[in-house]
Length: 261
Length: 325
Image 1: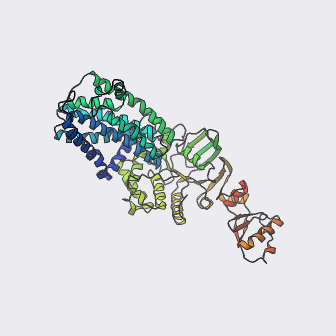
Image 2: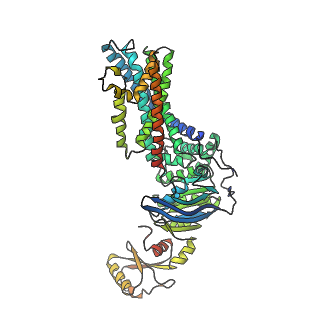
Image 3: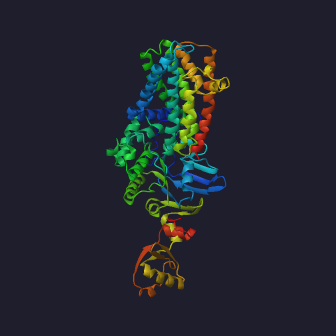
């Protein structure tokens, strides 16, 4: 009899199974989800790009305001999607015992986060690709470098996917998750250099803005969008890796405490 | 990559030797801080047997079930399932064991069929096998016509049957069910009991927890009665009744006006009784019908006789009602 499956290590089946679950659920409800993946961020892009773009005639590093703002808006949308997946959606899966059911199969909590965060990354990529294609058609994103925006999209997806669990794993009720948006997503959306360069902020705010987790994502995405790089982009990338490496184990710890008790 | 363990099927040829105990629990303890939820529990379940944990809410049944399924860390003690140490290798145990948790845990984002398929896939079945098996269990539980339904469209009974069906996806040799019929209407409960009886026919080893004594009586070959995390007694339902309950119970259904006379009469003669609603169960000396001749003149009393049951056993051991405690 050979049924001894080594407990440690990561079982690929668990991760692909959960990813598949999310993909199937997405396909079932795509008509609703697509409004957020594509239509909402495109409305923001068009409004800001054309509207504010008319008023702002000069912005550092870019030819037009629309070119400046496009990578930032894309990263903002990627952040929202990743966060939402592992906060609201994951909370519902905790609350409805969907994870508990999964854990009665040979799955570990680490694998649950791997499956769900890989779906958070997928959502971040979907909105990135969708909005980027529209931006490219408008001429606000061009050059082959722009394809590189997928890299910060993956990093932002992983980082905010891990962060979302920090909320869902401790949330006593769904109203608690409002904090994800009021304290995290909305402030970051506006203060991460998406809409204006961080350099125009007051001196004392500038380092705080740089430390915010979305800022490096916007910075790297803008590097790809405008095709301009220096070592700061490398540091920004490493900073995202560091934050993810800190938050992910914390997410696993908190989720384990919530589910295995 | 784990594959479907074809040895473990419902034909009774479990991977372990057939005579061996499939589930062995030794001195199992669980503390939540100061609170001791499970306090030195030991029992064994033989292959092909349906074994019940009977006890009131808060007795430690669910905690025990969760520890068996790897959903709760064990404070101390030992659990083996099909020869595998649950504490050391919980993943391997979940390969061979089907688990029905207390809450259905169905995925509202998926259809009935997709719920089954996903579970099978996560458990290690190939896609084709998961598909085929989902159809098989849907047929077995008569849910085929609900295959494409959203789970939230199902009735409570159907949800419960689906969650039991789900645990069958891997053709497990051992099934652990935490209160399989709690909250179901009597009709759905009967349906579940019928289906569990068929599973038993097929040779499955089942451990179930319940606070319904009818359920324990009907389904279980052996059971233990527990309270406050401890075993009070263990045996077959008949053995337990013989040991602890009067062989016959006289029941008096008294109208409100007559109830006082009944109480007075029994009280004066020191005849043991208990009251549930308007029903007075008289537990006289074992085997002998208590002398209730003095009550024949009182209007508004109906007298019936019934055999002792597990409810009486529980009362006798703990002094409390199983149902209401």
